[in-house]
Amino acid sequence: AQSVTQPDIHITVSEGASLELRCNYSYGATPYLFWYVQSPGQGLQLLLKYFSGDTLVQGIKGFEAEFKRSQSSFNLRKPSVHWSDAAEYFCAGYNTGFQKLVFGTGTRLLVSP
Amino acid sequence: DAMVIQNPRYQVTQFGKPVTLSCSQTLNHNVMYWYQQKSSQAPKLLFHYYDKDFNNEADTPDNFQSRRPNTSFCFLDIRSPGLGDAAMYLCATSRQGTYNEQFFGPGTRLTVL
Image: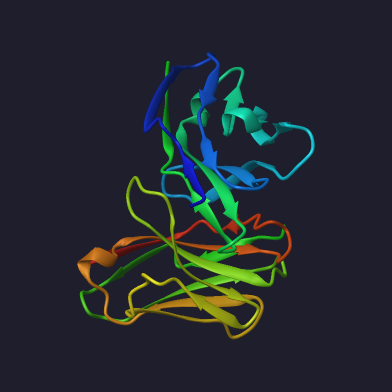
């Protein structure tokens, strides 16, 4: 079955440090992958998406993600984290069979001073 | 700006008292979704509309109903809210054929007393 896994429930990063949030997918064909961010009490905002082509994808707010088919991964990165990046991050994949998004369980990012 | 709007942002109801949540969109997307999100969990799809075609998830309780009177509006009706229905309810839209890139509203936080 198609699935998305985020192995880290919580991550704490110092402000100014680099960030990498992990996402692994299980899909048969080319997956369509997304990263969303959710601030407390808010809806989900799309950070970036991968459909095909260049495996390094640039998003908003200085985020990027790299699609690695050999590792079945789509990790989110940011070179320097700001306190305002503290939020919940969801990786999601499009299940073409069921025609709906499959979400990972989310990673909560905490930013320490 | 084109967007997804949800009203109200906060809704308090009593146990068993029907409640309706509203979603509207100016994106002219033909697909609309309702998700339920409980604390520290990923969004859970309740149902979605492709144009006027209603698609219910198999595990969505009968207590939850939806209406889509036109392209722009979609409603979530909870006929007899229980304490377990307290959650954030998210509306999202997408354009069919765009690999399910979904745009989310800010959510309605439902409290059941």
